[in-house]
Length: 393
Ligand SMILES: [Zn+2]
Image (tube, helix red, strand yellow):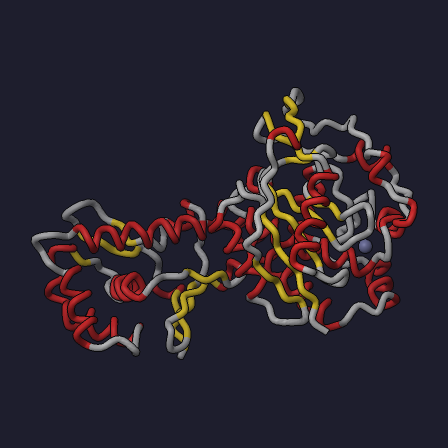
């Protein structure tokens, strides 16, 4: 059975970051179907509270779970003290607007009502804003399949790994819902002392980082997964996602030491460009950008922009390969516009757009290996070692 997960984002969440998260989730096949939404709940300032964070290193731990949120029918016996006391994270930025949990889950409910979404489907809100209890991710205490993941702040703990961490948290969130029938079970079932399991509560930041790097499923949780008869296909999909995110986080960790960038694959008739060591994330380029990029990949020694006219034929052929539905006339025109020595503006624009996309995808440090670089008037080239690149038909 397919299970839909509606990913809601609040308005301040960056569009392209949202789409990257979504695409990453969608790139794994299985019963979980991740759906984008156009609804964007707006949280006005009067709906939220703003806190100054006085302690630089510790999240405010004095916040009790609001009594009125805990409904009897949800069988709630949250260990309030334990939960809030353990919730220590380094706060950034120092002043963060914190939403009320009630407002967050109300917006999920509004979305459900408006779009007629069944109780079996998930609604997960991504928000850059903090929340009153300082959790990075939490389920609806009323027992519905609602939840939120805070999309800001994670990158601060795990440089460059924000997207992977968020995707990981969304996935574990869904798994927890399926493994525990209600919040009581969940609060009893999560591990307050880290055991290297997906269900470690992770009260402090070291635990969270440890979990993202190492977490598997402990034997208790494997048993529970069996008892709850979670669809094995769904569990497989979820673990594939988590495993890939973990792989990416570890790879990035090692990168800071080894400076070894990811491999790159270029596959299929569309010349899809992916980075297998970074959860196989795709670099999306339009036709002309891809043509230019593949051209420079094939020129490890580099080419000056004002000698591109010598490569016109090659570029036109490449364009027609990248875009087989285009006619030769269009290809010739588009390439000529970019290989005119008297004005290099268009080609420069394309190159800087590609650079931005690579920076956004990989983070500026690792991106350096893959961008088309070179000073004005000098040779332009992509520096990456070509043995890291493979073409697959
Ligand atoms: Zn466990």
